[in-house]
Image (cartoon, rainbow, N blue to C red; front, side, top):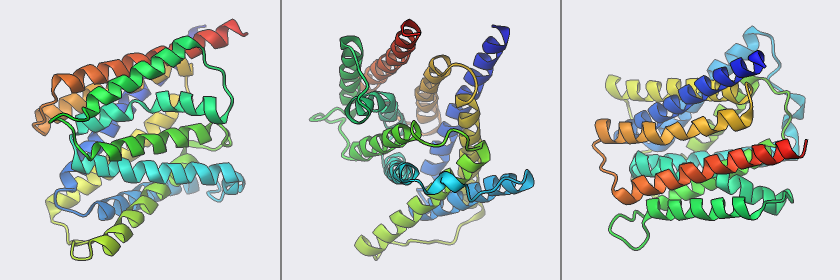
Length: 301
């Protein structure tokens, strides 16, 4: 019992640290994207993260060419992760991070919905109500038909769907991949996302710069973004592999709080009451679904 409590504490601490690091990553991505093409940022950060995790794998003599990596489900997972990375990066660059982060927190709701559709999982009326309530919260954040609406919210929604698809595919992925192997492949997806955005710009916006010479200050933004991403990925992996998922996962919602702090204090954003209320609704719905799932699993054992 004491060991499980210690694992839960470790998992919750690392989940909180991961959400703080992800928010810092978003902050520096937004700062860097004001001066540097988004594709260039993702390419450089993807390379930085891949080199770091690949180096760690080599130090402890792990084989990066993991035999099960070529399975169809991991290919599908990679495609969803790329789409999530591309669209969420666009959302962070083009809209307030408070709004984008709030929309991203609807990912667990979409995961449950996807599990019903694609994995034939059974969901009762309570969780259906929480899903609908959560999507209502997302609508409050997006604010369609009002002055607070931003067309760039579509990017945040598509990014959220991409990450939800990745999480669904992860349920069917090899469970014995190491943290460093997961990190290496995760940052390969960041690198690929940067290439996709660069190619898109070359085709549709040929007059816009796709690669620029960086000043020391801007290079610092990119490096800070990459380092924060590495720390976030590692902390998240540790968090999800320690303690009960139902205890650890709700701590991911502190990301909304961190995003509000960074957005208001450091970026001068002014989220209105709809964004704040919508964020709270999404958080409450997500936590309820997680706890309800744990309760059902306990009743069935």
